[in-house]
Amino acid sequence: MQYSPKILLGFLLLSSTVFSQTYKPASTLLPGKEFPKIDSDKKAQFRVYFPDAQSVTLDGGDGMKSIKSSASKDHDGFWNISTSPMEIGFHYYWLNVDGKRTNDPNTQLYFGYSQPTSGIEVPSGENFFLEKNVKHGKIINDSLNSKITQGKRNFKVYLPPNYGSKKLPVLYLYHGTGEDITGWEKQGYILHILDNLFAEKKAAEMIVVMDYGVALNPEQEKMPDNYPRTVISTKNLDKVVTGELIPYIEKKYRTTGKKAIAGLSRGSYQAMFIGVNHPEIFSAIGAFSPVIYEGTEAEPFKELPIGNLLKSKKKPYFFIGIGEKEDALFFKFNQILTTYLSQNNYPYFQYKSPETRHEWLTWRRSLYQFTQHIFK
Image (cartoon, rainbow, N blue to C red; front, side, top):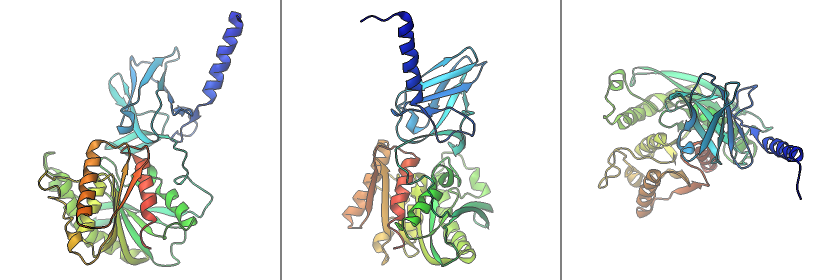
C-alpha cells in the first residue's frame, strides 16, 4: 500500500509527538524548567541556550563515561543534546561550551568534584529514598571549634521525628572525595531514607552526624599534592572525632552512648580507620565502596590498623557495600578486605548494589541496608 506525502508527513508528526511524550522531566530540574528529560529507555534529552557557542558537548563523572551523545544547534540559539541509554542512579555532569566546563543552567547544583556541579537522576524504579507520607525528621547545621584543625568545623545533624522523647544512638557518617557535608543530605536523600525506615519500623531510631571529611590544620593545608594528605587528614580526623566531636554531640544531644561509623569511598577509609582504631567505642563500621590508601602489595593495610579488630574483645559489626558495575580498583579493595576478614574468621556482611557504579544510588542503598542492622 502506498501513502501520499501528506499522509506520510502526518504519520511522522504523530510518531514524533508520541515519542516525545515518553520523555519525563528529570527530578533534578530547577523549578519551571523542562529539560533535561528522560524516557522509558533511559535516554536523555538536554536543551540549553548558548547562542554564541560554536560547540557544546556533554561530559561528566563516572556514570557518564560510557554515554554516547549528539548535539545540534537550532535557529533560536538553543543546543539540543540526545543521549544513548544511561545507567540508573545519580550522575554528576557538565557541558563543554567551546571547551569551557559549564554547568547546565536548567538543573540543580550539587557539590561534587570540589565545586558546584550539575546532577541528573536516572530512575531505578525504587522509592525507598523518596519522600513519603510519614513523620519527618529534620537536618540541622551545627559546628565546633577544633584545636586539632585550628578552626571552625561545620557538620550536619539528622534528628528523627520523635527526637526528644528518649535518648538515641549516634551514627557518624562521611562523604567522599570532592564532596562536602551537603552530600548525604542532597544527593544522598538521607532524610527520606531514614524517615521511611523508621516509619516502617525496619531500623532503630538514631541520630546521624554528617561530619566534614577533611581535617588538616593550616600548615598541613599547604602540603603539596604528593604528600599522603588523606592519611594525614584521617589521623587528625580520628582525634577530632574521639576527642572533640563525640564529646560535643553527647553533651548537646540526647544520646545513649552507643555509636556506629560509616562512610563512602574516601569516607569508607576514614570510617574504617577510626572504627578499627576504637572498636571499644563503635559497635558497627560501614564501608561503602571501600578504599584503602597508601597500601602496598606486601602491606595492603600499612596505614589501616585493621588488625585491632582481631585483638579487641569488642567485635564491631562490619558492613561492606559495593556497586556491581564499579571499576576494577574498587573491587580490588573489596577483595583485599573480604579476604583478610575471611582468613581471620572475622564476620562481615557483604552487599552488592545491582547495576550501579561508584555513585550515590550505590551509597543510598548501602546506607539503607546498613542502618537496618545496627543498634539492635
